[in-house]
Image (tube, rainbow, N blue to C red; front, side, top):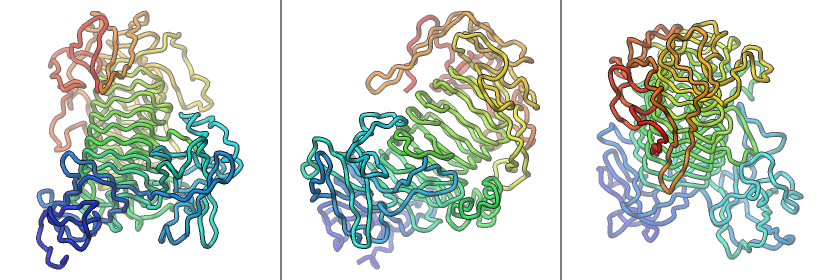
Length: 627
């Protein structure tokens, strides 16, 4: 039957179907994987209501943007793809604690209860962690490495849900079986829905180069994903696997042991090379990975140009969206990402709402990221990147971390509302019309040499250490904590690092800033060479974010004096060129850029635009809808 399906058509999938059917509306397939085997470029796979427990491994992609393969949930129907299976036949072990015995054959070739989380830049906090997980009625339990902590659970001191951390599980295996012990308290697991991870992904090609695939409208959850280091193949709950031209849109993605969406690299360019060869440092290894990636075709023609939009992503312990090299030239827009690294049982250097290496010409726009550790982390080669119109709050580490980039990159019209708004270990950034209510940390990084590129290209132009500075800050609002604008570091052991409210933290940087039109409230202080900054030390705009139903509102109190800030239109001419690469700030097509719209898309005045993210928001006590 499949041999006769060589032309593009629409296939239907239903939980009541049969894989020996022809995939027509009246005779649908039972599994998405069978439809994937039949689908050809230009074809559509429509999946109907129900739960599909399988890993979809697309054997081919489309041929172009207009001849792609589309996987979609049927309109108005909830199609669920899960990396888990239901487990029954739990046996009482101790009061509140139950035991399940799962034959090894149940898992096939991948047993998440034998597979440990490992990888470059992963920190296990002194104990093993498996890629498996246990869920009670859709909520994940906390893994422990000791059976005693299932019998007598103790609340976590690190996680965001102390009560939830009392629901624990432990695993051990022998040659024949895997044994799972779980503390369900007063619940009988045989009368509830208990699921365990059994697959390493929900939707992921087994080979690179599966291009032009659309995945739309699914609920995807509960995958035993491995740590996604930048020097490794990055397998997410859904991932593009070193391909081009995917569209991932309107999905609900949750409960990945590590990462939700992966826009990552392939295995052949290196897989956890640092832990396998610790004689060289991680930065050297990653520079070597980049060279191998270029040799393997890392370019606009072959890799990236993905669209990731309108997804809801939550309950992932590493990252909501992760990508090393494979996200180049992509658009990541209007996603709601939250509860990232909420359990905090392990940690590492690859954790954020969105964590990208090599965000060359990537647009990150209109995303809401909160209740994470880091919000946005742009690590190495953020060149031509634009971060615009995003809402970040309640992130315990920082809202934006830019690490060892040389620019040019542009950060405009964002709301950075966490305690630490910006961690800056880069240079060559342009920041315009942002609201920052948290601290800024400025730190050079002279120990590492990292790449910069030719304009709008992956082609290498050189390497440089990061001396810091060479940033542009125009028309931003900085809100202090009301304390005195003390000089010097804030209890920081690193003499190169300064952290406080406002731009004075850059006073010691080797490369100077370009500044103008910034407004400083309640103790935030400007750059020492800044001309025309508006200082309002006695004025507190009292920013407060309030969630009301489906909406999010910013309460802000601003007076008429804010209009006296010496602002001007921020554009390519004003921003100049980033020092290290010698490149200007421009649109992705090389044309002149102008920050002529505000956070909500409202047009700005060409002369004297309003400072901050909102153009003419009014005066007094304002209530502004921001999501």
